Length: 238
Ligand code: NAD
Image (cartoon, rainbow, N blue to C red; front, top):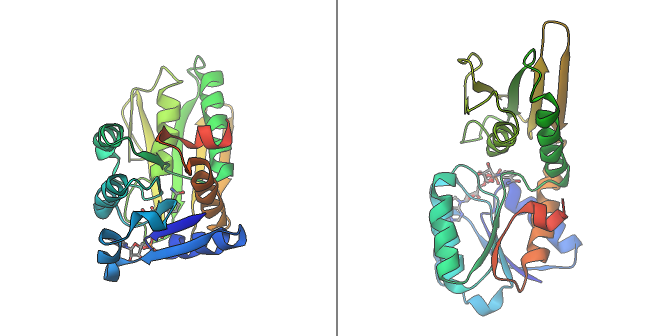
């Protein structure tokens, strides 16, 4: 498979390594300094694009890929207020994309576990839920996209919570998300349910960036030759 890499930072470089190990070819590498190469790129030269850049530029990059008819895997987080517009644009142009707040196989299993736990505790009012996420200091968005997905998993399955807030102390019915920024943390997410008598917690701890990269390449392999909008649940058959 021929892959265009849009964004060639920490993730772009890790994806290149994994993609080459899986016998794929990188035909384009785009960073902030050569964005024009993506605008001018001949669509016939790539089967799939993989986008890991920064929140303000992701939407334009996705639209360019849809315009070119190149299916795109989007890892950049922090642009989701535009998700519905992109969905409509993709349908109108018969394009293809998969966006995920987290491409790691482990985290997608963790998402399913989180939903199950929320269902199990949905009618036990003694437990208060919270999410704590920790990332490296350069991370631009807060809370993390993964923490927002986890919060949505709780809101959809636990009737006591109607919204989330990026604060440790919140009003009743509001799920607290605490964001911690520390040097060199790849991404840790913990879900805690606490009562007067005990505490239940589940945690996902990313040891390195390879998990995100493997998942993004699996998603690229899945979407090659397809049109439509998919999720990691489709890719991993969860
Ligand atoms: P990074 O800062 O190391 O790299 C970002 C890259 O984007 C840089 O190389 C920069 O030159 C490039 N860039 C900026 N503007 C651009 C533009 N207009 N066109 C092309 N390239 C441009 O960041 P990173 O750690 O690689 O993370 C990138 C994004 O991916 C972030 O939003 C991060 O939150 C997200 N992320 C998602 C997952 C996931 O699984 N979905 C996992 C890790 C990181």
